[in-house]
Image 1 (tube, one colour):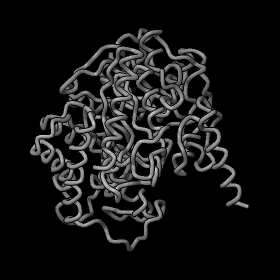
Image 2 (cartoon, helix red, strand yellow):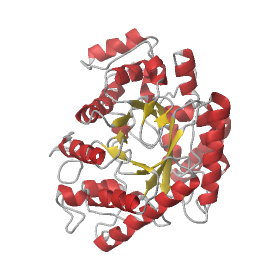
Image 3 (tube, one colour):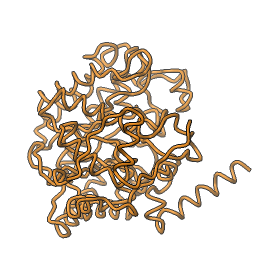
Image 4 (spheres, rainbow, N blue to C red):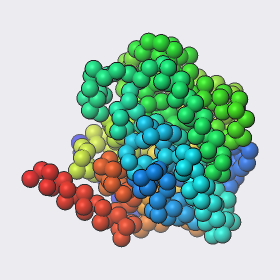
Length: 442
């Protein structure tokens, strides 16, 4: 791949590369639109800036939020974001990806309530912003400790270290799992969250169900079967009279060829026929907001997280990161414009650095999405919303440089955050990781 130019000094540099690659992204220099509220159900988002779910791998052994968990979310709230989408929280012990993943249960719910209270307090006292808080409920599946899968696929099994002879989760077990999600939703309401996310992205277990074309039984094969789990959970939450908004983070496409991927054609390219159908149906079921992602960092990290440099564990991206950014934002646009009244939260902004706000403002103005979300960028720059809304711009010396070090930490189940901008906290675990890897390779 050609030598890439990443460090844009001006919007003109960004526009030049957009023109060079024949890409179209809306850009709006007046970013004030990002400070406008929008209704998503029982209340408004105070502004159009979201913190995306990014795991910190810092939960206590029982699944409670740890000291660094509290630090992270209080920083996000002090930073002024109107929507804080909490990281993946397991619905059961079997659902945990690692031993330091958050887990909401009867024994930890009071600690989650303290986290919610501390997060709201940090936002209100520092900005007058009471952030809308979403808890992401998850089941790690093949990427968890127990390697529980819905379907087999040779290459995905190999790369996720799943025995090709391992039995898949049964329909009866999936039916019981629906009730685990409902129970977790009840606890989320008790803890004070505004909404629950029934996570269906990045090929964790529920995301895998959406692409289970070859699975027999009531959760595989037809579109109706592959979306059954999600719709059953939504209906059960409503039937239980749990007064909480329901949302989800959904893959627009998996990047895995048919018949193994969701939203994909026979070559693995995006085909959003089914994703758009599902989002329309969810809106009709009462869902007012949805968060759109794509692909999976476990297979093609450059597609879900466009980045500059190969990490020690990755590979050199086979395309210019701007192409990946454009793909993510364009797929969000396709879904937003197919369901214009849905509040769609988009992703893919971190690589744009200090110009993410101008692109985000253009995105909202042109209705490519109604809310813009920051993941890796929020690790590096937790007060980015304040700078966007109050100063009208992001600061170049604060932005994420997409070096992939936070991904290295997360991928190896170490304390995770920004090694560059939050170095006093996250350089030590990163150096420890490098030392351990050197010893393994010696």
